[in-house]
Every structure is written in structure tokens, then in C-alpha cells.
Length: 218
Image 1 (cartoon, rainbow, N blue to C red):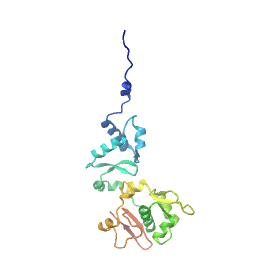
Image 2 (cartoon, one colour):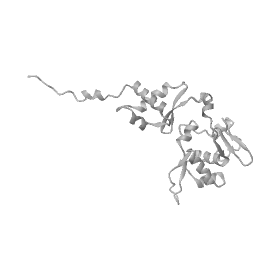
Image 3 (cartoon, rainbow, N blue to C red):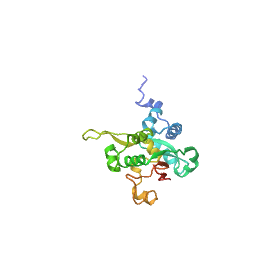
Image 4 (cartoon, rainbow, N blue to C red):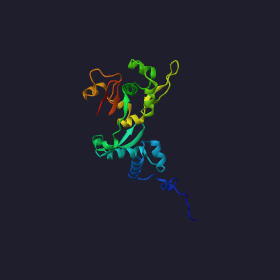
């Protein structure tokens, strides 16, 4: 009498095995290369076949791109491919964009970056002067700041925080990577008496009533 034993559990699971890690790396590379905006791990998981591990693939891919002209970088909770920092000068003609911000906007942006989450009242307290609605609106329109959680204080005021677009523009993984005052002074980016909340804000032109200067030019 023939013994027709059942196939061992999991024997057919090979039909659903995830691609080899090398192939997963290629998939992640393709998505990052083609995406106009940074992508999250959840985005990658949704695009890739069942069983893939985009986090591990990213780690391998990031290591492979070390020392290359393009790097795989983390921006907050997202990932993207970016030109190596030391080669940025090659892209200068394509990427240079003149952004004119008032001195008030520069200081307000700096305060938000270093003190977030921060309320408008707190910004005004640090600066020592009032902040116009136009200044906040301009930074919101540039998508360099956004509304944060309301504070659990009387009136439940809204707070402001910097955005992934801000981090991406300045090549930061998170706000914790912002340089300290000692680093800024050592790099010659700050005078002995920096403005409130001072930080390196890249190639931004500053409009002033008396003169137009560039702060923290790289």
C-alpha cells in the first residue's frame, strides 16, 4: 500500500521567497534614483515584493556608495540619493537659487531650528522684538518650517518646527546635526556676538533697509 504523505509544511513557501539581497538593493537604488522627493521605508516596502527588507538593503546600498560621487543619505525619516558634498561645486550652475530673506526671517528660522518646538511668543522673547505674520508666512511658503504640536499651556499656542525640506537643503540628517556656536565661530561663520539663535543657513541673501548683505555664505 503506497504511503502518500503530505508535503512538509512550508515546502511550497519557496514560491514566495523574497528576491536575493543584491536584487533588493537594485530595487531600492532604482526607486531612490527615480524619486523626485525622499522616500520612507514604508514607501519602499509598499513598492517592493513581499518579504523584502528595504532597511537592510538601504544599509548595504549606503555602504556601497561611500566614497562615490553620489551618496545614499538619510533625511529625518526618509532616504534619498544626493551628490557628494565635496562635489557640489560641479552642480553650482544647475542648483544655485537666489533666495532673498529679511534679516528677521533669517533670525526667526535660526531660532526655530535651534529651539524647536517653539511658539511665536517664545521667538519674540528670544529676538527681543515682535515677529510679523509675513515673516512666518514666508518661511511656511518656502516649506522650511511647519506647524508643530500645540503646547499644553494657557491658550494652547501652536509651535513651529523645521521641515525635512529644510534638512535636505542644508544636508542634515536631523536637527541634532546642526552645528554648535563653537563650530560656527571656528569656521568663521559667526562674529563674537552672533544674532539671536544664530546658525549657518547657507547661501541666503539678506534684504536690509540700509544694505543688502549675505549671511553665512558657504
